[in-house]
Length: 124
Image (cartoon, rainbow, N blue to C red; front, side, top):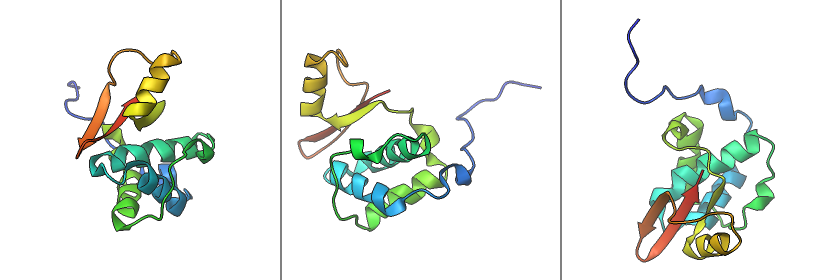
């Protein structure tokens, strides 16, 4: 049998069955409303937290979710999270500077999404 090329197949959609969709969408809305490209990775990270028993209270940003935030959670639940690693930390540029001072990270953020002067950063 030959080697497999390309991205790994997505996990079964039931990987996040029973997830608190509205709560995760409110996290997405609060964390990345100004950087839409970061919606899916944040949704994936919050859903993985939930699945692994990590409290969603670690997410400080909360806002009333819009259709685009709910759509990001839906995409994450449908298996699109294979695109992103499990992020240990997700935040903004100020968070990155704080994490660097505290010794949690060093160097430049390995994952960034930017829009209109706003930045979302993440590290596995």
